Length: 69
Image (cartoon, rainbow, N blue to C red; front, side, top):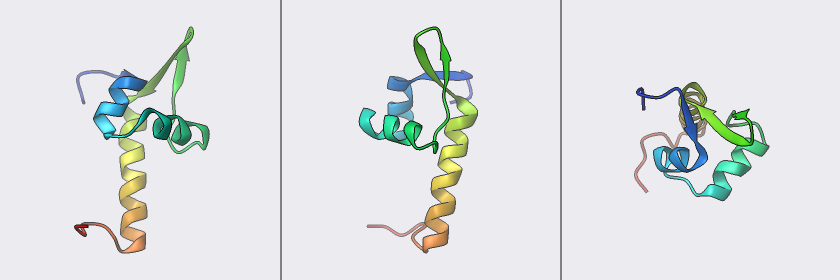
C-alpha cells in the first residue's frame, strides 16, 4: 500500500476487501476520509491506515480482536 498516496474507490475496495456500498457508507458516516480531484473521489493512504486502526480499536474494545469466527 505504501507505493501510492491516493487510491480510487475500486482500489480501496480491493485493499480493504469491502464492497463498494460499504466503502461509500463509511465515507458518508465519516469513518473513512476522502478527497476530490475534479469529479474523482480519492482515498488517501493515511485514511485507509486510520480506518484499519479504527476497526482494530473497536474490535479490541469489544473483546473480539483476534477471535476466529
